[in-house]
Amino acid sequence: MSKFIFPTNNIDDIKSAYDFVVIGSGIAGMTAAIQAQELGLDVAIVEKQSVLGGNSNRASSGMNAVETSVQLEHGIVDSQESFYEDTLNGGGGTNNKALLSYFVTHVESAINWLDKHQIKLTDITSTGGMSERRAHRPGDKSAVGSYLVRGLQKQLLEKNIPLFNDTRVVSLITDNHSVTGIKLTTNKEMSFEISTKAILIATGGFSQNKSMLQEYRPELVHLKTTNHPGATGDGMMLATEVGAKLVDMAKIQVHPTVQQDTDHVYLIGEGVRGEGAILVDQKGCRFVNEMTTRDQVTAAIDALDEDGATLIFDQSIRDAFPAINFYHAVGLVTEASTISGLAKEANLNAESLSRTITDWNDYQKQGLDTAFGRQTGMPRGITQAPYYAIHIKPAIHYTMGGISINSKTEVLNKDNAPIKGLYAAGEVTGGLHGDNRIGGNSLAETVVFGRQSGKQVAKFILKL
Ligand code: ADP
Image 1: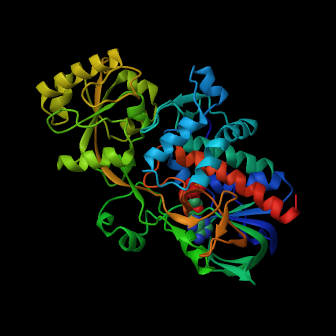
Image 2: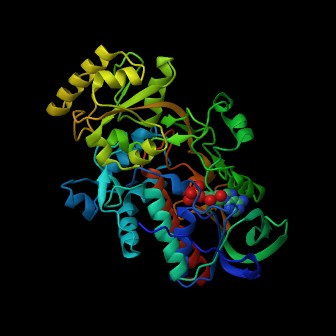
């Protein structure tokens, strides 16, 4: 695949006024900008980092959707009701039901919208807590986040939508409870204001902000995070300064499978388990249904009270999840031609690891995991040498809480009334996921609610 580098716009060319300014160049922001421009608005995107795409760029497993033609082509008959139930169960029943209803009824059109914009998610895999295969991904099974980011950037270019990077929004300007503009600073220490009729806050979460973590979940501060450096919760601060309400701020997701033995922190995508990997403890024994929700897998790893746990898989699983080639290339994977060799390399008990794998292969063949009740992510056994192991530990991954919005993505104040002209979408918002987000629902959220913002802002400004 040829490397596509998005040409950002020169800050000297920024205009003094736009209909709509989008803060953040992740998938929520780009989707909203494209949708709004297609409906007739003059739009600009501002991004504080040099690197574009935020955490969206890092998503690896898939984008959940139901009742799509892709599911049917894979012989999967699914329903919005089942997607709703699984997401609600995953969130401990605490999800915002209005947002959840809008979400499950608009994911199919989100996939179709992407398809119409030359972004094709034609393959499908599983994530933890989902009763069906719903995680849509590119046909070559490559990482979905960067594929989506690139595809949307190509649309920005085609549509001449300007994107200014190294440009941070420091405050929102309101007049008489309506949005009128934003204040910006550039990396050249230049500060200025531009006026706008509407703003979308699409600035992502706060997993990199130690003082916010300290305020909301002090017991997590010592953990590492999978997030990009710009995930510092700016959007929550911008919104509260103009009267917005925050919800669910203490709900923070700790992802179970993160490799952190080097200077870098690498998320090992849930798709590795979705394609058949198991998790074992130091003895080489399984200890959890690997495909339950992230909060439960993390709790089971913590309960071992060992130094994390180990993912075990084989060549056929590696072939089904090409991100493993990357993990391998950067030295995160231990490899051996036999199970006992792998146990030795990975410091596990060889006898119990071989027994674990023999038992697991039986469960997989029968489709019945009598040990831990796993029902998904069992498309193949662990039978094809070479065999592989990755040492993992939990790390902070996603902040479920954030700005309170309604299903039109309007930002709500403390009386639950919309702040005129102010919208928010993506990880910066709170409520959709409840206590725990299901893998694959974040990308789906960014496209569904990003599009919704673009539509609602156009309706608000153009009175459509
Ligand atoms: P989502 O998944 O919700 O789209 P991402 O994390 O992918 O969120 O993207 C959010 C983007 O917003 C990141 O690229 C981040 O650097 C950017 N951002 C965060 N705060 C600001 C700010 N104050 N001004 C401009 N951009 C910001």
